Amino acid sequence: MTRLKSRIVDLIEAVGPMPVNEYMALCLFDPRDGYYTTREPFGAAGDFITAPEISQMFGELVAVWLYQAWTAIGRPMPVTIAEIGPGRGTLMKDMLRTLSRL
View 1 (cartoon, rainbow, N blue to C red):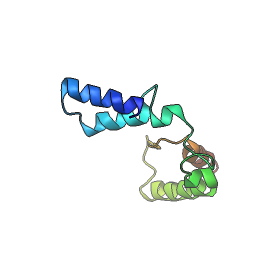
View 2 (cartoon, one colour):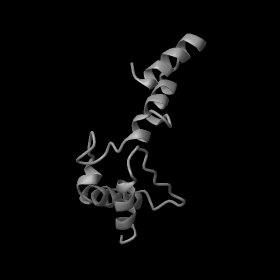
View 3 (cartoon, one colour):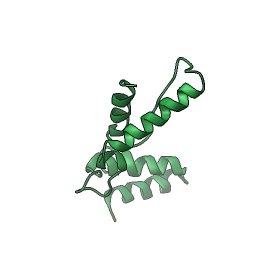
View 4 (cartoon, rainbow, N blue to C red):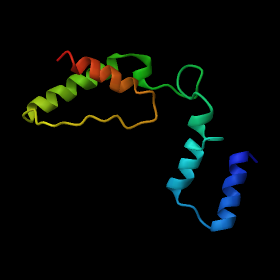
């Protein structure tokens, strides 16, 4: 049994059932044993790679689409653009670079 699994089992035994969001937070972000905090999961040497990490073209195309959609609705301000994901922010960097040129 892994250290994290032992800790989760002990926690459930002590306080009862655990909500899925708490379980996932422990598995992914626990400072000592979490998936994202103990390894580099992205890239060729990691467990997976995402489109923005392969080519900047994905973020550029998303930015062009986003700009066109924003223009089509009358360019309302303020506008919020948010990247919600566990990555390095590569998608947002590519999008912001492209948006600054449009």
